[in-house]
Image (tube, rainbow, N blue to C red; front, side, top):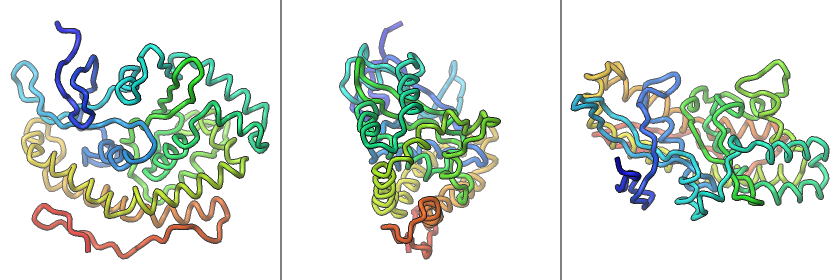
Length: 317
């Protein structure tokens, strides 16, 4: 057939020609049947300095047979980087395709403590620190349990571009609102291979040795909580995504018996997703203050959110 899909599959991107794209099932959410987890988390984080996957729900037919709701997503590859960053695809290198340069960088860190400014300054020439901090904040806030030993995508422009991280697959997030990702991402237990092996937590643990990084991380976390991750903003994004999927969910349930019912779907969105984004800011404020031994932190959480659904609209009171 044709070499390209000549269609704007993800209208938000402004791209009208695709070589590849992903068509994701709706059955990916861990611990609930909300369907929306990965799309929601990435839409909330879209205003950060991260590369992320857009979404477009679609109704699928296979040989004329109704196959329910699926979601078109960006495929994270060199062509994605080309249309996001306007970099020739032949100049894009993903870590998993050629791990040696990244491994050499980790070896440098192992032999040269980042506590010293000269070593940290060199690392700044190799890693996009602003991107890494925003990426890590998103993983922490959304409590992505299946990380960092899994679901990691990073790339650079060859021959000497800085490494950047792509937000990818957060279906294991938005679970335990009290789970401490600071402890999760600094675990250093040789007996652990998943989800937080020593090699996967090595970079963040090493960066914490540097005071400049720690201060930047703390200050940026406060800024994100006050702005991008403000509850009202997150709740409205959740409500808008729910409205897109809602009309087709009954037919999807008839086809797959999943979710169990429309009421169960709405219940999981309310009890899992809405509850999480409501409570998580206060929880993570306490965790970051405890982890860094802070006596103050430039974010005041509000525990008095009252959220209800009324006539299909999210009302914030």
